[in-house]
Length: 480
Ligand code: SF4
Image (cartoon, rainbow, N blue to C red; front, side, top):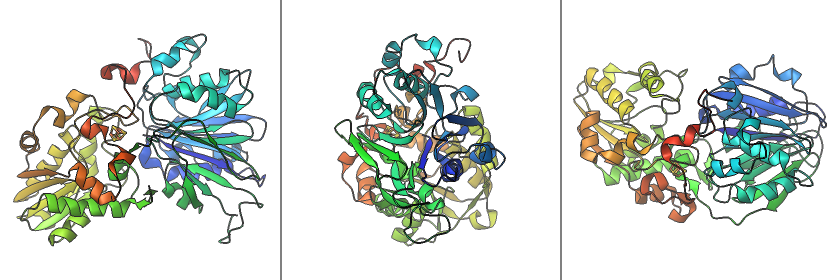
């Protein structure tokens, strides 16, 4: 999972990097390892990227030197390649045929096959990501222009990719035929204006972003989703041009709606706070239990806990405080960091918890270690009973489409029964929401989504040994 943004402004105010970086700030939850922005002044591309959070990397000292009217931006959560500077995005390739910069959300599943198609092989890649390889293939392709190159290369690419691609004149938004990862199109207003006048002049200020929350932060209007199998070409002063390069077979990652995306974002026409609240109501119907209080694991368990409390009639309280400056536990790359993460992330409100029978609502259990620490913390704070309720089904299978949910043997549900998991985490009871319950909360049909980590039905075949997939482009000594 990563965050991507693309911006096209017609005003010649050279503020595209600033708009893109601001929008990216709203997508920080999607990736915290690195951030970057690429900008074009109409004839040259320039990139600035580094390891770290968006606000650190793209601060006000950097942005003014990145002048241009079109930009792409990216924050990274790694699924292929280590967390090193070379692997930060956007990627940049100044080829003999074209110069392009790419920001990628997702993960390719035929990387090895694509590498065989790269003239000069692995030695030509300065980084070890699937995105670097895709960028090289696009820059090399003997096509008329970038759109033509995309139309020729993308049918050979398998897996999850929501892309923002920039050349000197245009930004192009792309979604893979399944649309695993979201990508939305928005319209930018003139600065300081509530009127529908567009940024600078009539005809276009446009933005692409992973989530609608990124449109809100820059005051853009949501126009529509980029469709699975579609390219949307944005150029200053023109309406977006839609190009269908593949037939759509939609399979949006349902975990985006359950947990990953921001609650103020909209997907498939649903506000995610409301969808999660309704999932919490379903959870209360599926797994009722007598208790004194319902509380969320902050922050992401909040909407489902509110729904659980509403449906069960049991009072809602916040029993844990989250340090708002700590990153998401799940998203950090190593087990050691994850373990350290929960200790600095949450602390109990003892006055609320002491002597109470608690229903604790969270949105997932991946390895089980974080949940065990949370239950232990609540018990040490005096909780009488801890009943865990999870607003998603058990995760039995790894994700190959852009979420590093660990390999199968690390997923606790793949190797333990629900009762064994309950025992491991130290809870009095444990209940997971069913796939049916998720769909009832969403009020949408199963066939629009990928549920593979819950039911093993992978929409796109996965040809690789799972244990190798993350570092397959790395040489024994690290990044080439
Ligand atoms: Fe989302 Fe799971 Fe499918 Fe991955 S396997 S895209 S996490 S639903």
